[in-house]
Length: 244
Image (cartoon, rainbow, N blue to C red; front, side):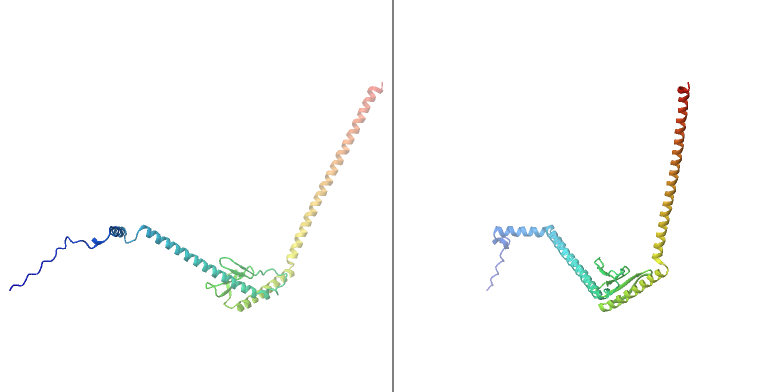
C-alpha cells in the first residue's frame, strides 16, 4: 500500500505583508519616522546640534560663574585674614609716637591684596592663601622677613620691624640735628632770600634817587631858561617901546 505524498507548501508570495493589518495613519507615521531616520546623519540634525551647542554654552557660563565666584570668595577670605592681622597690630601701632608718620597700616584690596606697614614693608598671602609672607623692598631687591601661618609670629616680626624703623628714624634725626640739617638749610634759604630782597631794595632806592636827581636838574635848567627868556623879552620891550 503506497503512502500519501506530503502536501505542497503554501505559496506566500501573494500573502499580505506584516503591516497589512495596520491602519493608514500608522503606516504614514512609520514612513515619516523612516524618512527622518534616513535624513539623520551620524552627527545628528541641525536642530539637535544647535540644541547641543546651546546647552554647552550654558554649561560653560555656569562653570565660569562658579569659577569667578570661587576666586572672589578666595580673595574675600584673603582680605579678611589680612584685616585680622591688622587688628592684631593695633595695640603695637598705638604705642608709635604721634609725630611719627612713616607707618600707614592698611589693606590695599587690589588684585593681590596686601597689608602695608609702610611704603617699603607689606604682608601678603602665598599662592594657597594660607601662609602670611612679610616682605620688604630694598635697594637689592625684595626680601622675605618672615613667613608663617600664625598671626602671633607675624605680629612679633612686624613689631621688631617697627622698632628698627623707629631707631633708624631717631638716628636720622640725630644726624640732622648735629649737622644743622634741614634747619640750617632753611636758614640759608631765608638768608639768601633776605639778601635778594635787600639787593632789590637797594637797587630800587638807587634808581629812585637817580630819577629824583634827574628831575631836579631838569626842573632847575627849565626854570633858568624860563627866567632868562623873560629877561630877554623884558629888555626887548623896554628898548622897543619905552626907551624912545
